[in-house]
Image (cartoon, rainbow, N blue to C red; front, side):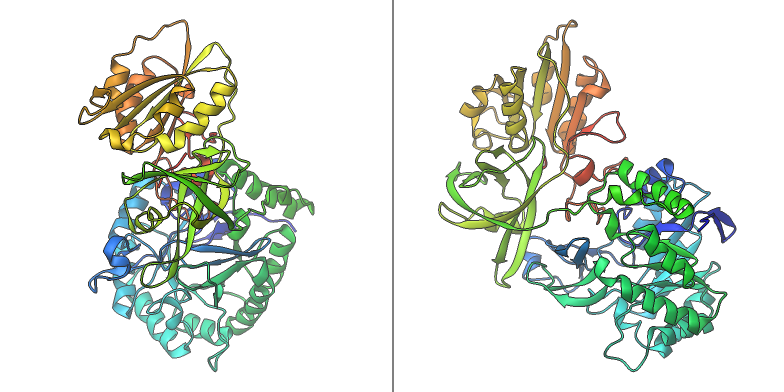
Length: 575
């Protein structure tokens, strides 16, 4: 088929987007990808409400505050099979006012279509969110379809009268077109998705978005206990719903379809059965930004030429949990502990794994967090106690078992000659992410100097092992070990030889990285400076988009070590 641009709300764009809450959750990700790829024509934001929904932490996990709206903790993503997932994010969002600011600052290209997705517990919530966003987006999408919330989403989308009332009231309240996003989950109600779509169109909706995830289905590896299915397993359901909806609403209203689109042949079925545009989500799992751009470009090429080049970008990501036994706990008197296991792992320096406990706390729910691979032989993790999961993890002792999945992220694979000098800069407890790089560089005969900083000596274990790998400089804020001060103070005291090539690898809090970067850039070029900052990492395969950095880079797939200049860098993360 000859896939060409379509006219949508006065803009000529390729009829391809990403679903709400996938990859480009942060508008800065959308800006970044759209600058790389004209074929990404339609951006739909993360569903947002007038109120923020946050991930519970600390005491709130088991004793929630009734005045706060909570979403789901990790694990939020479970793999069912090749290109099939269950997800339960629980509509995490910062609130419509914050989302508005994010969209305004992101600078999404004006020649692309921007859709603001909204939800709420009441009709008034939908209207408030719609009014907040309407003047900075081109269309609004009403999420009547999320299966992973007890009070929002799908609860409104299974009854034609409710959909009619909600849609008409929202349409009358705003001056931009409105789309109704529908659920395929109609098994337990006396209606079909066609009935729901017709009610929305009769109420004044510009068009329909379908389908959201199927289910929810139970799964012991999700914190929520169940999740909506996405990916290849719901492809037939998508086409069935698309046919029903197009028949019910007639040939004119706009339809964007999604749910298991992986190939141009999938998309052809959608366009043949009445879709005006498509959105691709699960297929992008594990892809870096340049790979997503390549995939979308190839996708359009394949549709035009009846070829299949896009499939070469697909990745069947490994998300299987594997059990490991703890053989040694180092530094157990501190809140920063090192756990050695009975397992070796095939990993590159800079990669990370998720550690999972299947039942923790009074609610016996699973929990997981990402941790740098401190060592690969054996698998060793450094864990700083700073939240609900890590407080439980740090109670583990020798002989206990936990589970891991991975490795994830990009390894450090840059070519560095023996005439260069490597500086590893750590703040907080970033040494957990620097030991393996130090070890691998040292094995290659490259000169390594480690600058390790912490608040006190209790947070600087493993020093004897670091000393075996090269020079070691230490700073503590309280002066209990090494120089009193920070790693930035250590760098200021260095004398650098202009005849050497210096490479810097920074790992730690953003404040530490911001302090050392100007000092490093005085003695080396930006392409030789890599930084790993601890952004929130939730899925590990780039789908949820929560780990975006200020430049819109999803650090779980682009990093965690991000080069200062490259748009598609090489790659620890400690959480």
